[in-house]
Image (cartoon, rainbow, N blue to C red; front, top):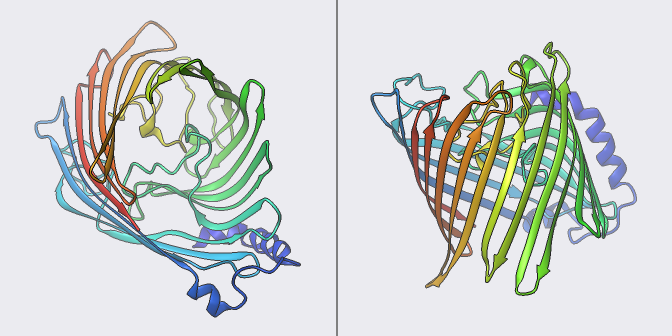
Length: 404
């Protein structure tokens, strides 16, 4: 991977230093490290259907993803991980963003390719410290700003050097990445972003809850609009309230332009959420705001965007006038039947502009999930009703995940 050469010297030096004087580990020879390693296999088959106003035909996609990998047992505190991914489609009546079928709505799961998903060296020889060098999965906090976009068939990964340290009440996470491998796959001109990405994350416990401080600097070659500097803080906690459990989350972030971004970005992010749960039934009410001034808006280009602002994925890019998302979320356990433990969830969103008085519409999301130790069955539906922005959209997903 050419991009890894940009951090190769630093990564090699860090791992070599970490390995020096490492304590004895389970594996004492290369043969033992291989024999005691673990095979990684997971697969997903998913049907996705999209009906969107403005298109004569609905999109239907039946895609399969297979990931196969191997991780050695640690030798001198160091393990090696290699994992490949193959994505194909059995029904291809959709715009994958690379297949040219623009007569259909987008389902962002390009197919018919195979590539490395992860290829990394992992060192844990230092106390409470993990150093990872290479192509890797990175999910910070709830993935609101940095995630792996695991909902899509080809996840987002990073060619990076990452250092993690965790104490009893404090955790630090520092990453330098030279390339972001995006969900659009290796055949897309948008399949990778090269540049300089620095991610700093510090979390600690306090009497009020868990506090997270973060500083994310993105300087992306050829994607100036995605080049931003974001600094913020989040507080989250859950507290017993008699037979109930209360929870809350508060967050604030400030974003400015970075790198080659010539725009004057000066945008705020705020989150206020409160919830109650009883007998595992959860209800949460929240308001999330990504600010905009009519020209530029708060952006989260490395986030797992599907998890936020509605599953219909209408707001993957923040409108220039920003977005205010007022939402109500309900989750209900359905118990265990046979080998499967099931849960149901519903989320209602009301969308409006931050700048001006425009409304963006409403959305209802529904989900049913049944799990065993290795298998997950998912049925999911999103219904977005437009109001002055975008178009009415309905999406349905049926998927089977299996890992062993």
